[in-house]
Length: 239
Image (tube, rainbow, N blue to C red; front, side, top):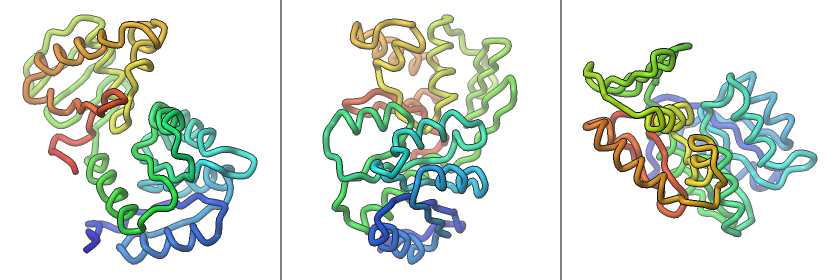
């Protein structure tokens, strides 16, 4: 049985194949979601900015603008950067999956797909990313953890956590892109400003130390096998 969403989240389905759009829209609507559709990248961006859906089901192969381009623009816009994205594509090659996840996709489903699996994946993504996160110009609060950008300080349950500058930058990078997988190579480039093909073990060691220092909040950092790490936007375990 498909899980019914607790509220009528809006899902934007983007695909230039009418049959696929109809199939996906039907099953999502049947599961209780409100559904909008778009057949091109530009229409998808316009709708996303206007409607602010909870999640976008995004086809990779679109006319004029690829799904990768749409995803990049969604993540670059402050108004749409936190919208969850499920990539839907006929491409099975691992580099495409890695590129999509590195750009900020939350999950990846290949065609042909099971409509029931798609609905379950949508529900899982929304459970993982749906907990409100308090943000301001200076602070990000996720569950028991507060990250102060200006003061470069971190607190868990009100107690200060002593981090090195590198550990703080790593945590802030994961927090600002919470809910989305960050590849080890991308983290090396962003945090260490290093070439993405060297010393990826450096990332693993720093994440391990960071989890230990964060204590109960360390469980927020998830390992995504074969890709990298993701900071959950919820203090409770998602699916």
